[in-house]
Length: 211
Image (cartoon, rainbow, N blue to C red):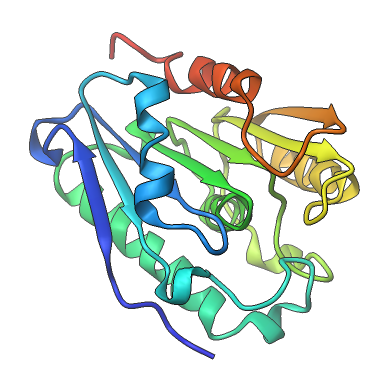
């Protein structure tokens, strides 16, 4: 079991000059640099980009559908690192409603888990193939009001890691907390990010241009 050392890769505009921030969260076995390269597809202006790197390239050891205690203390450490990063971005002058999240696979699950435990008005969130974490969903973890934050959740059908049923369950919970959730299921899609998903995500991330 492990905790995460703070290691954040940055790109884009310096945070003290940026109008908004995007936090990219990589998948299991991947790197911060891998996921940060997605910003080339989004073409977001006036933004500071942040990508934390997981120790051992994994945010938690087992499936996101395993009992939460089996993924501790790594999961709490990962959630704590994101919370600290969000606080630092806000301290640099970027308001919460201009902070965006983009995660893939394990990083998408972590994205959804973090924002739902800390619901508020964010700029938007994109979970490429993800769902809320845990064998059973513990509703006591989830607090706050998304105030109509746009959130995109995608998966393949079937996906080897993220069942459609968990995506639908996550959508229901997050919608009840007053988010605008878009779910897109791609029949037969491999465990990857497609051009169509990037286009959909761009609409969410660029919807507030002009702020």
